[in-house]
Image (spheres, rainbow, N blue to C red):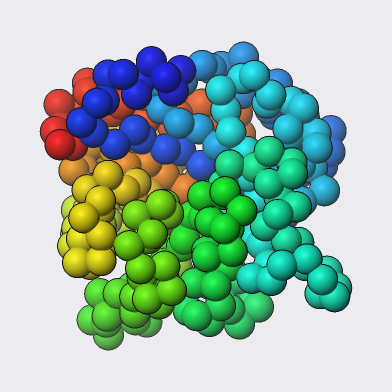
Length: 269
Ligand code: 13P
């Protein structure tokens, strides 16, 4: 369980595995999936499930007391008011959400979310006691053009600008867009290189950058998770497709638990 692992990781970062269900499942399959996940736990890493808004009550009831957290996949940058179709961070807090994903590439692409809008959403989440999981990542064309670092740093810098030293309270997810849902994973070395760039950028803004969790996302599965988690700056994963299959998601959570207990041999201090 989280408390147990925390005690073992006094100087380190507790790995975090977050399932992003996206717009998948039904009310029935969601509850079944969570019942199976609950039986597979407890885990020695922090585990969270970000579900579609309408399932939040069921998810909260299914996971209460399990040690597994839950959250949502987006929130409004506004306080409650006349914003048809939006969901306020304060509402998510009412449902016991711990996390909210902001700036996922699917929202940046399909809903034209800008870097500053994503930063405003992150600030709103923090204002209501939620931990924003801020996604950054480059397209295939940007990687091929050699602009990966510049793109990711630009996305991160908007959030740093909006949050200042409070940026240490967020979780960052590096998700190369070309690796999302494609079966193409960044190599552990490619992912580690970007995570190191991000941590250095965060360190210039906060003395607590060394305590921040930086997750990797993009075709993480049961087979590749352990090697990713063994990288010194990779502190867990944001998992799409594999989070919809209990056996796969549990295996990823177990790989993170092994990392939490230090069996990968890496030092996170
Ligand atoms: P996949 O794990 O399906 O590639 O999705 C990654 C993702 O977008 C998580 O937010």
